[in-house]
Image (tube, rainbow, N blue to C red; front, side, top):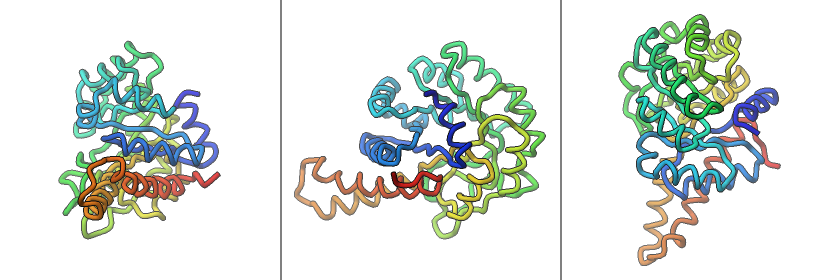
Length: 283
């Protein structure tokens, strides 16, 4: 079944599809293991940096071997759109959200056309509203990030963007940011704005910056119409913390697979927690 069909099925069941960025084999292994246990469709994301590190054909082969879907996350140039489509990615996100609405529409429309000329069934997602760019632990909200309701995209903006770009999915700024705040809770989501945009457009809504959002807000966002949720920073943090512990506890060990087992388990716990929030319980 295609990814868009799986997303629609999840919507009807009041669930959201989990999207997890990976940068190495252990991250992919952890996500795949939990997805298999839950029977949940999962999207694996690779950012531009992660794609450069992993290699596009290598990422496609690895993700395909687990039967998961693959997304080219936050692609900002047409060359990146072409490369992902040619490599066989299931989905590409074109990110021109830092531009004014008119320019964002123009650039995204061009990216959509480029992707579909190469791979007609590829899913193209567009972004509306800037939420920062760094999947990291933050000391402050990213400069310019839209977190006030009066600055967020309106339902009319969303409707126009979808109609004029032809995208298959939309990621609006609704109070979410990329990254995790170090000493504070991430900003609250506008559940009412999610609901209003959901009513205005026919395509699935995607929530970026799913790390650091309160459980209450996450459940409410899914109930209001979010169909896909991105998680990256928290998975990276789980990897780093578990790896530091494992190295400290195994100072003389040289075999990576003897060290990485507990690291994978820590990431599995995080993925399981997120999928539960998105509505995927244990089988």
